[in-house]
Length: 392
Ligand SMILES: Cc1cc2nc3c(=O)[nH]c(=O)nc-3n(C[C@H](O)[C@H](O)[C@H](O)COP(=O)(O)OP(=O)(O)OC[C@H]3O[C@@H](n4cnc5c(N)ncnc54)[C@H](O)[C@@H]3O)c2cc1C
Image (cartoon, rainbow, N blue to C red):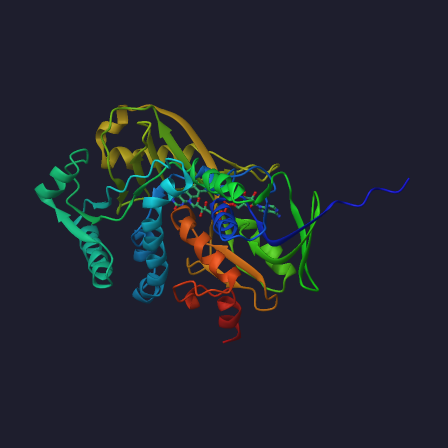
């Protein structure tokens, strides 16, 4: 007996990936009246979007700022504008989606405890302020009254008023539910295998149905390169397994998002009272499975940095830790745009800070799909910038 042919599904737009980028894009497209299908290999929000630390970033990250040159910072400014504009959406999008996303934007503090680091933090804040970003230097007693939970060894901080935190378990599913209310079809446990161009659009094979669509959005995080290559472009996205640690809940102490100039740290307190401690410490990867797992060495080092910045934390118990795969590009700028060799196919990926960028990523990708002006210059995020640079 011959095997039954796979079911066929037709739609205007197929969105591949059920993280925050794909769910937000599906929502904005479905809300605009398009027939949208979202295909997700596993379940929604199970990759980076549901495993991150919930930081809402609005400043240049100190590690690349210090390691790279001024040209890198200046070239990153459009990406920093993207993050700050996305932060504006975070303020109201929960109400629009009908879900409390536990967003709080009481500002971020990049703290320093040496004169050398303080000077660099001041220099960075001046650069950001000169380009219209909210950044100011806070020192001495002003810092102690703004953040009494910090060690008195901290002598200066950059305060970035736009920054904050959210609960990362909430946003992508809320976007997906709202997309469904507007008619989007969400296919979970549906792995996209091949994406090919055909008359009038694309034919996509999956572990489930064959999907024919006029346009396709690749929002598959670290797996985007595999799909993009089938459409004729190499996008250099690398995987970075990293981990987060969570403490027992406690009464509210830390309203801010805290970073430390002297070592990797992000520290914040979730609405539940749990302290979330991260900052990009490397996780291990299981040799047999390829899955990220928590590294005890990274846990020790991350907690040591946290206890240096806020010494009372050494008596707070860590009750949970997890690992996920973050993604990067060589210049740390996002990849956003239409694939030159495959009109109608779009890529959206924001390195390291894609949770923060997610709502605006959804709006921009939806605008590109509709052929509308995305309201910003995407030139520095072009998909072919690396291959063009290689040509010289
Ligand atoms: C531990 C950790 C901490 C982080 N902390 C922060 C933070 O505090 N703040 C911040 O802004 N960012 C943070 N990030 C980064 C942020 O989480 C990511 O940039 C963001 O979630 C990326 O979202 P995405 O939707 O583009 O990709 P993902 O969330 O990776 O989603 C991609 C989806 O595509 C699916 N997929 C892949 N291939 C296929 C296929 N062939 N067919 C169907 N589906 C497919 C995957 O299963 C996945 O669900 C952190 C990341 C990690 C790992």
